[in-house]
Length: 246
Length: 252
Picture 1: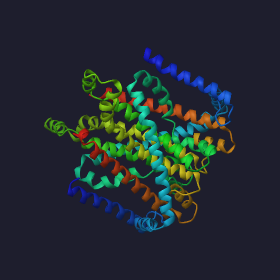
Picture 2 (picture 1 turned 135 degrees about the horizontal axis):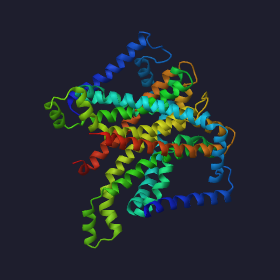
Picture 3 (picture 1 turned 90 degrees about the horizontal axis):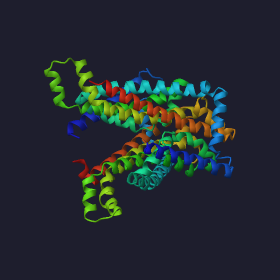
Picture 4 (picture 1 turned 90 degrees about the vertical axis):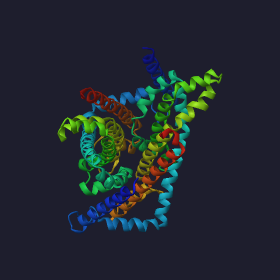
């Protein structure tokens, strides 16, 4: 209880201090939180929820799910074979090192401007960290556990489900956490591109051209809250998965 | 890595390059969409001798390195404070947990308005992105310090500052180094992204953003992307090697 109070009292104090300072300074660049909150409410009433936030989240979700599914499956397969791993490791390390935004123009050429190029950018940013983490996890399965599973005549799929996947889960989730923050970066960046039609990043960019700082701050605050909620959601999934393990 | 590992790795690179070459030459993938690997790699080789592109690389590396240094200077002391004074740590964590998930890309338009699209804007977003991994690893590292070692020093009459300096700080350094390595990767992404958004001056990101605007520019985009990837790989390799060398005692 004391910890809880400590946490939120200082948080509240900071918001109040921000309010007082920003209201006193009256700098158009830094509106006070009350104005940002009012702006968020106003945007929500004007339909920003379905017009911008939902398309952003759908693209983020599609990209994250596709990228992490492919990453986990490929990663486990590559990590289980010693020579395949050694064959592909340098190539995969290179792809992970490529800053994903540099390929956004390429995706725009490949898929033309629109949701497909935006989702492809997110998939690319998610795929490599998840894949390399899953491969690393699958490589480090205790040989003794695998031998025991063989001695009990577990079939291949059973070994995968009961030995390899559980042993790789901590690494996989570490990859997913990293991938989520990259996916958010690519979600916003792909929406800042000329030709984007909607999304939180689009709204943000469009507001800067109108010098509408209240909307800019509302979008930034919303992104912080969404990021917080998505991270929390991933933690809940992680706990559920752990509990489901035999 | 073993010798067979090196051979296999080289074979893997050759295989991927050859596959891309075949796909491109056979016309399975359109030339304007994805040029064959030989074209991209030749162009990347040419760029290495292009003084303008070199200036771009230098500009990106300068912003990246400066940003990382500033982030270390901010995050390590703050992490030590948060990690060694638990009430402060608990209270500040809540604020940090709302600030951290804001994708730093979202700050680019606002910061560009306030500071223009120059080095100041690039540094601001790089620092914002790079601070968090270093901060979290510092706090986490402090938590993992052997309590017995600290108690021993206290028993010998050392005060809290010297316990921090003699036990906690050295024990935390390997964690800080890991944080710096993670931050370096994000910082490179943000350095390139901020440049792509800024659109003028020099930088790998600007080179890429401009290449997207002329016909046949995709060769240049991909050649510059190859360099960006190689730089990222080199930086990560250097930092990881440095960690293993400096903190050998932590990798027993």
